[in-house]
Image 1 (cartoon, rainbow, N blue to C red):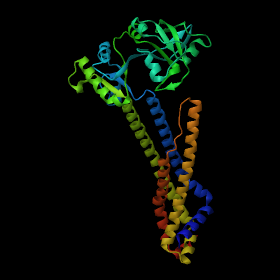
Image 2 (cartoon, helix red, strand yellow; image 1 turned 60 degrees about the vertical axis):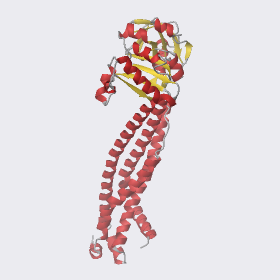
Image 3 (tube, rainbow, N blue to C red; image 1 turned 30 degrees about the horizontal axis):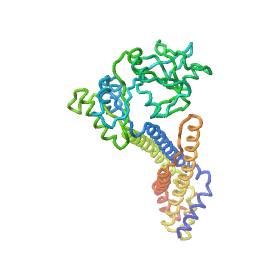
Image 4 (cartoon, rainbow, N blue to C red; image 1 turned 180 degrees about the vertical axis):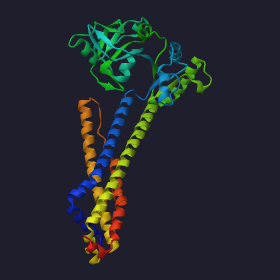
Length: 415
């Protein structure tokens, strides 16, 4: 029997039992849809996060306290480390120590809420130095008022620049500039309101409150150290050399001779990008593996239904053998049926997965205010089609072989 005739016969057999064929491929459709959807969302999430990280610029270098965490259990040690002090700023600002460093900004994080005349809002509060850093690196500019300056930082002034959401929640339509908000019971005069910009680089600009780090340290936190020091190299090309200079300078400031005993660590944007790519890739592989198990289960379902089909079509098999069909012809027919079913299931799954991915991307962009980009996982689509066809081949082999080995005489007698 020719290949063309084999496919034609297989299609006739599938059309005869449309409901059973549809149920057979249901598991495959769900599995492939899940794989395409997860791969697409994974790629979209990776693009979003990397774009947000990239907003910091390739020249940004962050110094954090404590030893670099090797796992989730080490993160707490980093959060409560107190190894970054004012003397580190003095060392870093010396041109001979780090020649390519153009900007340094210490920062502390202030937990808590802000209030104004009975209205309360819980924003992200940063105690910051070098206020120009925000406008230069994050394109954060005030819509009303201005930012505080270096003199305000030195004088430990109680001034604040707030995001548009903070202004809306506390002041409504009223003008916020010149008014006083309370943070941890201390009054801060609002000197500026940032433009409505939304989410960028892991925080929402609209929900920011930025105050001088000296004020935060002295009056709100009672500490003399920083939670991180954000620096900027003159260009992305000199980042590696600048990192080495920073590490050498910090060790000198801390009296450290053994790098293994560093009480700080340096993070570059390239390093963050690589870590994020690795984490998302590993997570996507893990989730895809879970779905792959579901595909195996779906394959077992295909095999079971094909076995039922073989039993129901025993007389048909007997008639075909009686008119000259060989064991190989019967084997190929049922094998092709199984492969067609799973391949069609794969195609439907790819179409549904792509559709759901597009709808998800559209919803996240329009309703979650995320700059989410739809990503069609071409490799995942091709792989899904191949895998679904292989599932039909592997799990259709046993029913097809069983059908081919039936005796024509016994098959014709079957009731």
